[in-house]
Image 1 (cartoon, rainbow, N blue to C red):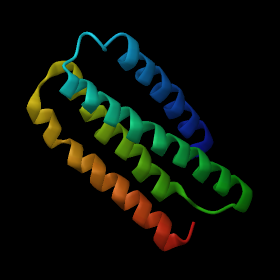
Image 2 (cartoon, one colour):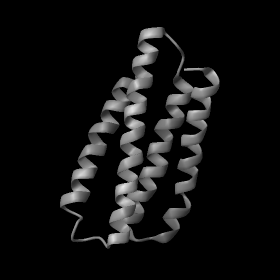
Image 3 (cartoon, helix red, strand yellow):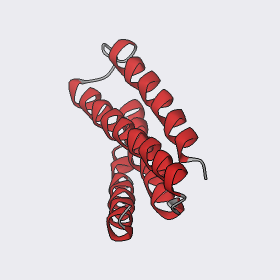
Length: 117
């Protein structure tokens, strides 16, 4: 897997979604939901950069980082995706999905730590 490309794509999307939240949603969401949106963008962008770095590491060393990278990618999709959806729809049960994304992030970081990447 090319985590440089995945990280770059996710970073692109994160910047676009951050700008969308700051400009288009500023007057449309409650302050609480706008804070949820910002949290989603923060975790999205942090993990996009981490995936980019993981991809660079894999490219320079030949290390197998697939499991960790997939866990972090899934974390972005589930954690940030559920918070984006919650912010836009106000459907509170979507927040119940968010911890699954958090566990995926934790599992990805644990895998990276254990493998010594």
